[in-house]
Length: 178
Image (cartoon, rainbow, N blue to C red):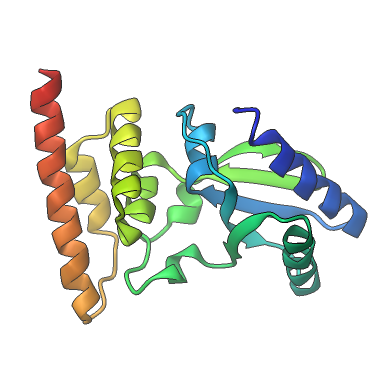
């Protein structure tokens, strides 16, 4: 675990202990990359959370007052029009567990989709790093894509263009490493 992740974990664990209520976070974004063993500095917390309503809102206020940037909600699948592949929560892996804090990260293939939803250049670099690290195949990504319930919305077309671009980049990346 990268050193810059530890203060975030300690901060949230201390908060949860003071509230005397356990918190579960499913990290995505830069902090998750660190927990996958990849190097990318980040200054915010992107996560799905499980806790009581009062604790949730108090945590957001606590983080805001501490100057921590965050995007934390109870449903990362709802962050965009295109949802996450079904059952992503069941495939998540616990990487830290204490009495007051559980930290999980997405299965690496689900992580690809969490980043592809937004699809910035930085997201694409993160995706390719995870694909390389875990030797993720195009077939496994295509299989996981079949678990997405795509809405009848123009955003589905945009997502499919980003997906196709990822497939092309994977081909290029494979040629570069051959």
